[in-house]
Image (cartoon, rainbow, N blue to C red; front, side, top):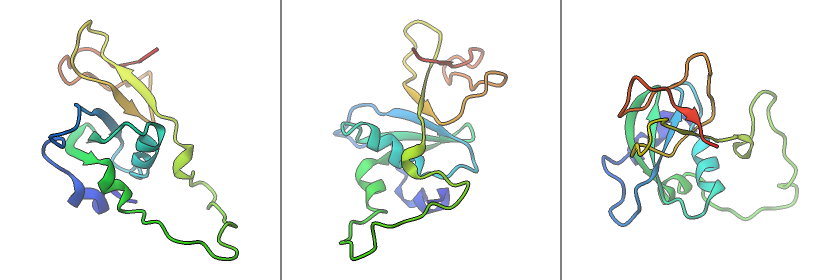
Length: 135
């Protein structure tokens, strides 16, 4: 699933009946299949704020993401599959949780699939502070 495919799903605000969602940061060239990993890791997650390449795009609801992957009945041989070399299946993503080092910062949690210690992302509220992996 590419970013262009989910653009119609983006909302300006989180769903009104949902708690404040976390933030998922991905690179501009990343597959947004990581959304499946985010929602699949915790059934209570109903929405997420999506930031791509450092630019906030909006909020995505769990139900909208799952609508891209309709269920179907499987037939003989459907359980046999192959993964293309170099492309990890959606369940293979490891989400790292990042946090602002400023005590009491309201931004967070921030999840991402990549973190470069030499060029870490910065906090939106405290742009002079680098996000750190939460322990």
